[in-house]
Length: 202
Length: 202
DNA sequence: ATGCGGATAGTCAAACATGATCAATCACAT
DNA sequence: ATGTGATTGATCATGTTTGACTATCCGCAT
Image 1 (cartoon, rainbow over the protein chains, first blue to last red):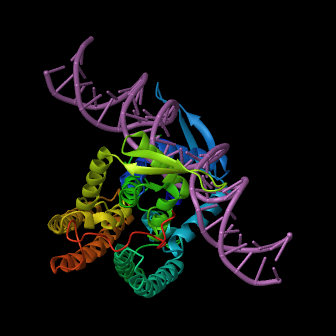
Image 2: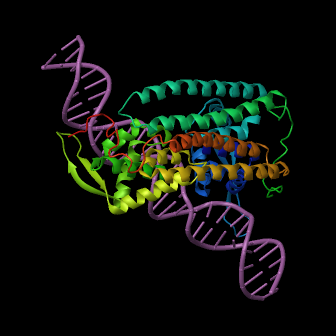
Image 3: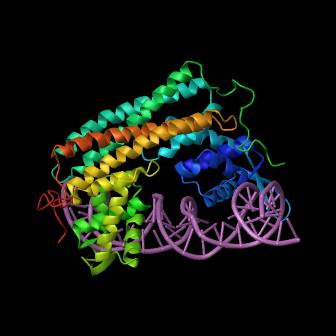
């Protein structure tokens, strides 16, 4: 799933050099285990996969006492590029069947310039609007086709209702961003939160 | 994924005895490939898994010309029970992180009595309401915790906005069901749609 | 000193999903 | 007759997800 890749890449980017368990704890504190189905195995697997693909490097291995060794990762330049690509993809594209994408994208959107986020959100609203309009025609077509069960129309309506909810959230946030709330790429030297615990191991 | 199991079980239940490709085509015409990530492999795999678990039986194998043999399935009594259990679970439970569940459930809800569907939908609205209320407290807590990144609050808001959209859909449908629209379990002898093509092979 | 819950750090086999690929057939125009 | 593209019916290697499980260490009360 692409949300997992973005989450892992983004979390490593913030805390690098960082080991798997730390990434996992942080993402757990974002409830990503729930909304992105992020199980322990997924985290470690994604780390290994991203490393194999050259987006992450193992920068070392630490052992503390008799505990399992922890592998420490950092982003490569390619990983940086990939992160931005995935982030933009997730932020600019409405994916009604991948609800985790927007959640993951919003987790890292403050790394982009405020202006881009505004444009991306405006674009999302345009996409949703187009979806709503086109789906009305789809529903009319479905209604006139006796071979299609009528619940398919209701499916479309449900998907649109959820999208409408998402659009409402987008509008509310857009207003806050336009009003100068929140901090974006380059506007603030340091993020206010740098840890899920307040204490970084080591 | 549990939506896949419900979809396959339900589709077989409608069209049994039926082969995999037919089930796939039907679910494709419901756009389930999009909203439930239903790839070809998932369908055939689910059929085999459900058969292994005793919920489906292979009632035979047909060969037409030089094409791959088609395996024909039907529900067992256990499969019937499992179908109803999965359907009720999906219909009665709000699962914000499994958006396909409700879509799958609504595909088969007309097999249940109208009264149950009304109760289930009313219960869904209660659940959403509780979610909305509890998440307001969660947001307040998150806001007062400087260690938590502020996007986590926005995550909660987005999830709630989507849920609110779902609730809107639920209310609209509930009204129609209460008004006597649509047909439910035992109210109508035959479903009006029995095929995705109008022509059943054979 | 001992017991016990919780945090730390991660593994692994089994289950499941992915979607390109196959090879025959059909519809239909050239 | 032959090429073209869509349809039929499914498989399979590869990759990903699942989540129970391991094993140590720490804090702290008994």
